Length: 132
Image 1: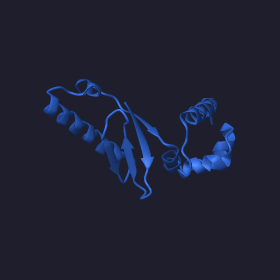
Image 2: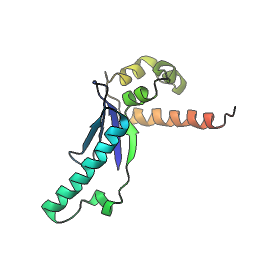
Image 3: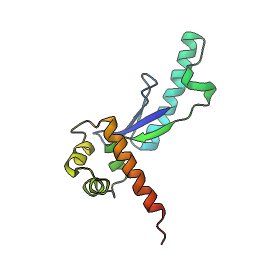
């Protein structure tokens, strides 16, 4: 399951998974939010089983996996040494638009997310070749 990490306006973190309705975790730190999210998932599965007699499909007998992904705002908050303007230039995106994504002023489309991810991955591949 894919869980999206967002940074709240209060400085805390929130995590949710679109495929599990009502499953939200939160915390002052990213780890606290992850722990809370897992606890909520376990409670959701237990409640579902009490109501239906079955565990939810996503639960997979307790062997579910969580892939944590960042929204852009949380990404820049988690890695403050990455400058949004310079990052945008490096991946070929308008710097002003990237700053708007960072501040959640404008929504980002799935197509744009895929483009950013692809170009980010290319930067990572180049950086893996660097040795000091």
